[in-house]
Image (cartoon, rainbow, N blue to C red; front, side, top):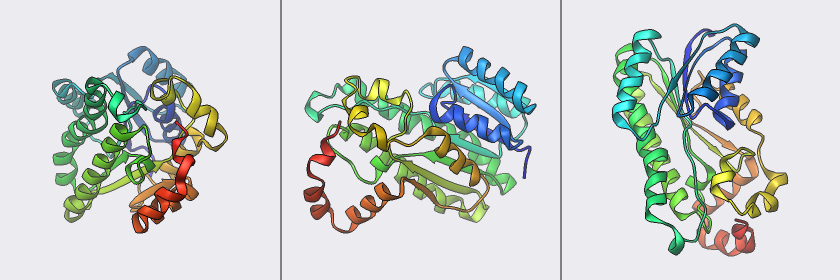
Length: 260
């Protein structure tokens, strides 16, 4: 199963970078996309030195649809095929709903939702024609259970899950697989933007997931038919209970939901 071509957006740091290393370690060719080409090239050199696999890097702002079309056109010319697309690019800003700046809300939707859809559209025809491939969308537990001060961010992740679930059924006749990854908070630079006060990280730091752990879990299921990966298990259990008893969970959650 090794030597396939894995495209990862938002690959210059955090979970995306960890996943690039994990896939390369397993013998996969990785195509890394992000805005910061210097960081990508540093990762490229390091991976090639450690694992001697093929690494391609492209500068890409996923909010620029024309750029998305151009870069994926380059990938198909230079790499020829895409076996797995991992839509990892995304960010959040935590604030009270009435304090949220509309430009920040729009920015999150542009990256987390429209950018994800734009990248996905570039591989659909290719995968459907070949009757194989996989699309992995990095969503969030926030897409299942929204909490205070994350209304806009949670809305983007609810949208990602809605899109992912519909896409999965749409692509089933073509044997193209679709998987959602719903992690809780991950210890990355995500919170440098999401929570500049540092309070959220201070409050829940010991419960945060390690990006290497999440990356390994995703890599384990690159080619399986698993529908979702939900981490950590206890947070997903609360999300499941919330779907059944929302009023009770909101009441019991109390101050725990106000950690941001």
